[in-house]
Image 1: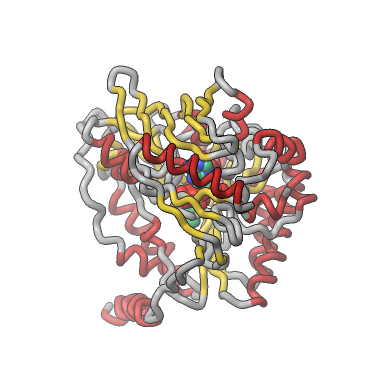
Image 2: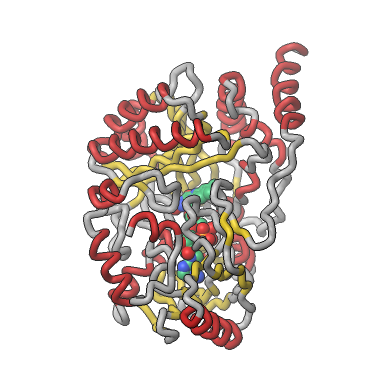
Amino acid sequence: MLLFMAIPIFHLLKTKWKEAGSAPTIPAGYTNDASLLNLTKVDSVIQVPNNREDIIEQLKEILIYAKTNNLKVAVAGAQHSMGGHSISPNGIIINMLPYKQLQLDTANNILTIGAGTLWEDALKYLDGFNKSIAIMQAFSSFSIGGSLSVNGHGWQKNLPPLSASVMSFTLLTAEGTIRNCSRTENHELFKLVIGGYGLFGIILDLKLKVVNNTALAYKYLKMNTEKYLDNYDQYISDNENVALVFGRLRISNKKFLEKATLSFFEQTILEPPPLSNPNSVELKRIVFRGSVNSEYGKRLRWDLETGANKVSKNMIFSRNELLNDHVDIIENKDAQSTDILHEYFIPKRNFYRFIDDMKSLLIKSTIDLLNITIRRVEADQDAYMNYAKETVYGFVILFNQKKTELQEKAMQQLTNQLVDATIKNEGTFYLPYRLHISKEKLRTVYPQSDSFFALKRKYDPMEIFSNQFYEHYK
Ligand SMILES: Cc1cc2nc3c(=O)[nH]c(=O)nc-3n(C[C@H](O)[C@H](O)[C@H](O)COP(=O)(O)OP(=O)(O)OC[C@H]3O[C@@H](n4cnc5c(N)ncnc54)[C@H](O)[C@@H]3O)c2cc1C
């Protein structure tokens, strides 16, 4: 028994000791994003003020300065995109994070929110009114402006991306005017800015529909992957009480991608508990990090997490607490490597075929696979560059990559193979990640790309708003 417990404890301690190297810092005059592979020299990083009048005045002055000095402007939120989407080399970087404004219209359940606000700030604020966010990503560490600019999606059951909860937003355009954008006003801009990667102007304030905060009971199913869709239909889609849901595939060599789990949360009639400060995430984080480059760690993590799932079955959580997960929970503190995310959206008819195609590619690659979750996303009616053209299943795949040229090449190769499998299976790839994909493949998956970039130049003829995503794909 002692030996049985000593081995996993030693594995987790070893994981912690190996992390001794400190996280890299960003030198003055440079910026980086969550990939930690985009350290870039910039002209300046400017913090905006947290005041509606001041921010408008400051941003207008920056635009005039940039035009006169022939500088590009990139807009940054929490910089969790991974391809320099928030960075323009030698340009001005506008850090929107200080702009946190929150105001709830309780009569109509509409939250007016500043673009720099993080989801975690919004959840804390709404908790006081027993309200919650309708659609957001799986972590609360992102800014609202950055989230709308990628049109993020989450694990709220069978919903379209975030834009479905957006009523309108104000935008500071390249010419320095403020435009209100909605489905009835400046509709073309509305569509372009949603998932528009900061290329059409600076989003200032958004109006979001909010929902009630509720008490949710945890449920869990384990199955052979071939039963995933049947189980999803039966236990999730046909069950009107399910509010939040995500699936996972087993990634250790034994039964690789052959086992799956569904974790879901059902509405109860109980009062939701108040939002508490997050518990320490260190143990969960170390279990997660212990799976890096370790078959033993991957099995241990699957066993510990599926075991813990059984124990916590039927436990009650508030919706706000469940949505308020911070990216710290998976933080990589190893200076020699970085974690890179991919995401592929596949229609139901090709769900199993994509898993088969992905399986052989992942087994052959030298890149270390850390996690695969699955979420269903309904068709997006809003974004010009929409990734969910119909109901799709999003495969969210996290890898650990060494910071070497060899691994960078291996990642590029793997990404292209996964994109080819996605194209074969009539799916799309998500745009906020690494820029390893060619212009041609972008246009195969997003045939509207050329008109998107033409409209960019219509609204911003001097191409003032720029970033590495634009430079790569335009
Ligand atoms: C660990 C991890 C987990 C993730 N999970 C999910 C997930 O569950 N679902 C999902 O959909 N995505 C997910 N993502 C992707 C993430 O949603 C996006 O990267 C999102 O952009 C993050 O917001 P941000 O504030 O970091 O934006 P940033 O990375 O700072 O910016 C993203 C883009 O938005 C633009 N932008 C930012 N603010 C503004 C503004 N005010 N006006 C105009 N343009 C602006 C930037 O120029 C840039 O092009 C994940 C990413 C990571 C690293």
